[in-house]
Length: 495
Image (tube, rainbow, N blue to C red; front, side, top):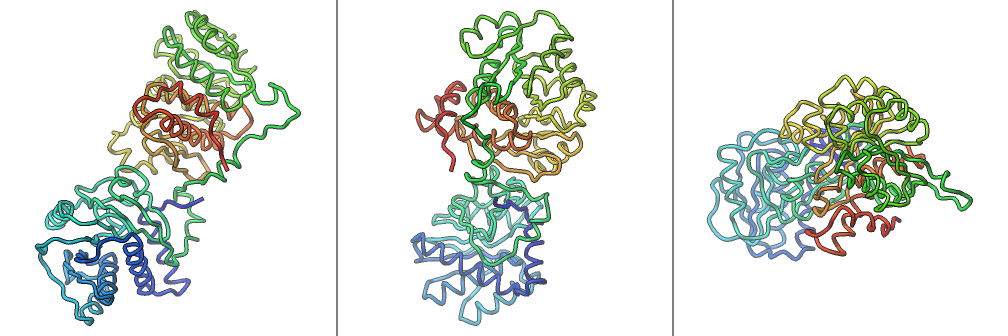
């Protein structure tokens, strides 16, 4: 597991390292500068003309130290101080003095000329305000300059906690970040602005993050592999769970098919589809492995009987927003006793009837909203969710006692009492109708096999993303269909 801290969490780690492990801030600054210099050298970047642009905080101090090290090595270095010299932090002031003591000069207006490498050391991870005025002009000029662009810790103008652009941001080719990859370097658009990210160990302790469950994390292949449900040799179809899929209103058989087929692909033993009667023949043709049961009108007792049969439930894909769908959903939410995933139209019905959330108290529900659905559920604008996605996601999962998947280019999973996980898999090939139906089936299929709702969700999101990567590699980013993900699921290999 690797932590993905925001600026506040990283500053707490810095403070702990300096005050309790007795590693001076200037020592950390020297280490940081040395790592940046080493990465630039290792990448064989042209060092004929180096421009280092410094702010007045500790990120600027890193910049002055980097400039000194290059100057000591005989490189031609120009340092432009974009920050106010009168507002320098003590560490920045010291590094500036040290650089000047080696014969280095500092300019206070953006220097003309062509540079082979531009080092951004203006703002660090603590920036949270919009970039305006002179700073905005400087960053825009940096972006239009030629030369390889290198950011120190994080590109100036990127919010370290959400990846948003704070008005304007430095567009780096390389970012050298320290100790841990910041969440804002992992989420879009911050990830695009960061370029290639190098995570360098400079001796900052991350133990404060061990105790802070608000710090998000990412898992590796071995951790995902450990979540896979066991598959003992002495078993039968009943050993691997019975999943009830409630999906597909009239003309929406595809959603039910993708739910059910995905659940089978990840190992569910039996899948029963409860769908509108007109979908029966096509589903029997598309997926003969599934058990098909249908409705014409709402039958409360039948729905309750189906719930008694199931080890897990998946409801919502393509069910529509009409009265029958609402009654089925309400009956499921009130009577289900096993893990239950709600997606798509199910989420939209809940958004219209928030009183249904009173049924969530047992902690057995998984919700899988994309940004627009999350906006309907939370009552917040999408832009507000993106600015505070970790907080919004965590708050909703805590308030409703659900495991919540916020689907986006970087999907995040939160659950009460668990650390938020940022998914590392997936690609733009997944941005296609039906992809979310496959995801719901994958998660529900894993829940049917006995995984906890949290583990099934974390693993399911990852497997879904990997299936997209495989399908895109076999075809291309444009041509992948949701049905292609089903075959790709069978080709995933974990450590």
